[in-house]
Length: 419
Image (tube, rainbow, N blue to C red):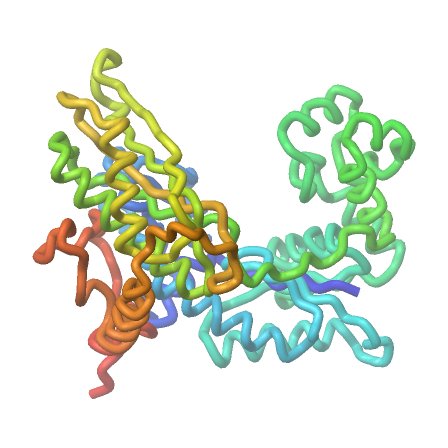
């Protein structure tokens, strides 16, 4: 059996944990630079505020309806997610963190357990220890657990936030209730194809011949069909401990036109990527740099370009990576353009200390000691305490976040003060 635990309105719930007065009030979370709505509480959904709604267009509406608006507070959300996952790991050794607010658990050898009661225990413990409300769906497969979770959330008063598909009658009823467009793994194009055939719900999808599903929806579609039939075919994915690519990309609050301003940003992004890479004990062999103009300007001034720079030797040095990122920027920079976004992506990873050395090594061996010292300082005193010479020492890049809440759990200066 599988369980899918999903945090209800996660971003809004994180804000409510530390600001209880927000309970029962409509809450929306905005994207980077306070651009558009990316998360809504149930009350905000009831006001028909759409996902992706531009904040500037809805400003007066938010004020009229008393909608509480917040900028994205990713340090808070990431830490609260980690706390929830740590609690759930105690219920099963087989776990897959599917997203920041969703996790699959597989129950092997739990035949003598009442899994529905285990679901209520999980829900109660997570709420008690973190303040985050969750819904739990339990079923013989991952795809059915997804549907069970939707039922638990949709009919929360009746189910108590937990629903278990543990017999054939419940499975068929759940599949007939689920629209084909809401089935996990069915994309827009496949949905259109199935609806053209008169397939309107998940139950009708399971009645299709296996050969047809495999031919038109590939082997992945066939696995999904079997999963919906109650035959577990989609297994838990293994957790990848290290990333294969690391990116730092940002939209600027205004626009940048001079090379020196862009150089400072690219150097900062490259340094950020290098620090993340060192945390997972990796080094890289290539960098991708891109710049993009303001898409809202005249068509004649639109410009976007990118280039990949191969490093002379594999490295994790912020000094070397920043140097070659700036060289890449020189290749693609154009004068007279209002640049709105830029980014650095590092690629070609290999474990640090286990890669082929170059006889004519360009990296200074001193860089290793410098980077270790730099990381220790940042770990102890916080980020941005030391920078490279081509970074602005008096400037810390900051997004437009007019509605940012405090980082209650990750910043000592912003913790709650109990009077």
